[in-house]
Length: 194
Image (cartoon, rainbow, N blue to C red; front, side):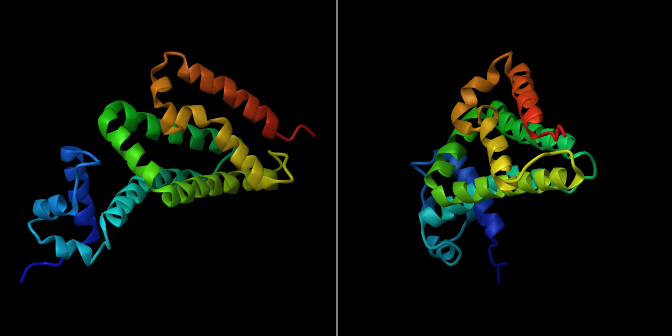
């Protein structure tokens, strides 16, 4: 008797099929064929094509947020960790866009269809930043009465460097310098100047 399929195997196959046929043309039947099973087998794991695409989008978004979570747990200055976290986020997104622009565009479109996944992802990222900001407030590095709002402001102030809709701007030869300028303003705004 064959081993039962795992969700990971299904998602891996779905990514391969999406790469081959594209977002619009990929069907559950295509994924089933790639796995050598009936499409009914996939419905035991995912109720429909939308649920399957949602799961692929969520996994892609996790590939962004998981490495960032490890920075939150590091020892060190909250200011240094904030910059490190932002630089890592920017690096992950820009690397994905530059190394495989077609796949990046497909995942971006897939994620945009998955509004709940995107909202959850942004909330998770801001939550990670909130932990760092709270640590900075506790240590006296940061000034803030509204930690979550300050974390959200940092996230949104740097959107130009990590929001997929702005990926075309990331090839600018000045993008790193521009991030440094924005970072200096953020740093000035969050530091406790008492």
